[in-house]
Amino acid sequence: MYKLILIYALVTGVVNAATDAPKRIISSGGSITEIIYALGKQELIVATDSTSLYPMAAVNLPKLGYFRQLSTEGVLSFQPSHLIGAHATGPASLAGQLEAAGVQVNILGEQRDLAGLTQLIEQVGKLLGAENDAFLLVETISQQVTELKLRQNTDPSLSALFVMSDSERGLTVAGNNTVPQALFDDAGIHNVAAKLTDYKVMDNESILAANPDLIFVASHRIKEPKAIKALCQHPALKATTAGRNCSLVVMESSNALGLSPRYPQALATIISSIESLYVRR
Image (cartoon, rainbow, N blue to C red; front, side, top):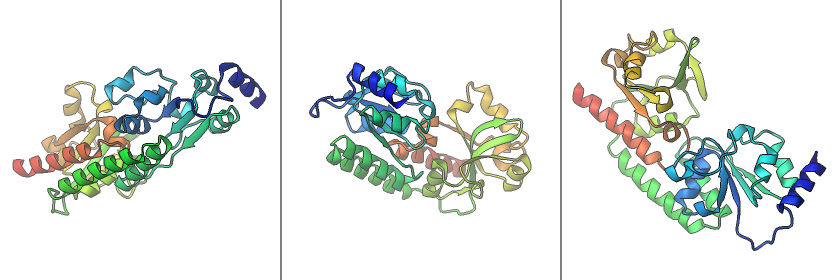
């Protein structure tokens, strides 16, 4: 298999490219693509995965499919010099096959909080030779978050739930080790699903018992205005404080679920929602 890939790479010009040639980057993962754009290096991207939909300009880049299931041949067809991928970029055989074909592969780890975002920006900046731009971006984000946290809720009893999707088994919610958990922490609000790890189904009885004051939901779950009211009437939510008042806030999925330079905007949405809740009370 490796021999076939190497032959393919030689034919397409991936191997033995001049060392001073411009980088040709495959960006895998919406967070990675967004960071590259934020660093002003988008001209280096030749293709992305299907989750790379922000900023709007990224939508028009060639797409290689879902980042966990990329095709080696598909990647090599763009004659890349580098693949920069988010955690879980795959399949497992991808990195070795691309490296055998002369592509520099960097799959970056992911801590799902502000510290992880800082690390990710610094890593991408180093790979692109944009360390100074990365430093400035990190400083800007850190300052924005600091200013927002000065507005944060000081009532430790206020609680929230982040809903990613639903099925017959129940609601899939954001537990610990997720970006919504980090956002809730920075906003000073309790995540009623914090005992879960990652994104897990939470049964109706547990949600009712937890009784969240606010519900946040990923935008891909809400396709039409009626969907908001319908979700408030979900069996797991309608008897909760949030459900009775339909205190539901839709958040853009890629921003709320992934590590993004738009982290301060996501945090601002949550803090503003808390402030609005206090006004209604």
